[in-house]
Length: 218
Image (cartoon, rainbow, N blue to C red; front, side, top):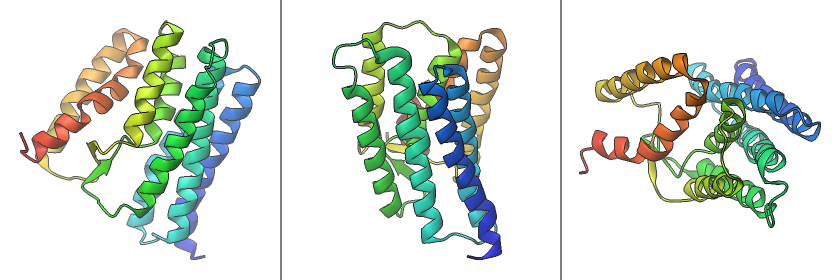
């Protein structure tokens, strides 16, 4: 293993560790910590690939390791957190996290063989982890059936053929959109913590629209 690959693989390792710590926290009933560990995992995941490309350390083993870490942090930890926090008392509630776990695994498997750099096919797997973490941290009160429905929709979106924009695009149009959304997000978070859910809502619902507009397909 090359020395330069230690940094991105180290971030993937942190991703995996944070996912494991989130699982332990959920089992112990510390849902706030479980949510925070998932957010830390998302941060680690956001930078490992970028750094690997920056230092020319992209490798097959690094890609596979990153996906395995994502499966633990977002598929297992995210599903367990939502189940224990909101769905445990629901009849047939266990099938919701099972669906999320399977869809996350399928999404990651497809990502590993997808050569496209312009867009994601299906909602990226960190989205489920972000939903789980943001739902707990925002303290939004939702009916159990609504939580289950949202979780199912996200799961199916991951294995759909819907195209979502990546953050590798350097066009001025793209970053103008991102800048405007960030300003709105910061303003809303300043006034009310529940708007921590907003990034997920924007990307999940409007990501395909943004992608189509950027490519002038409607």
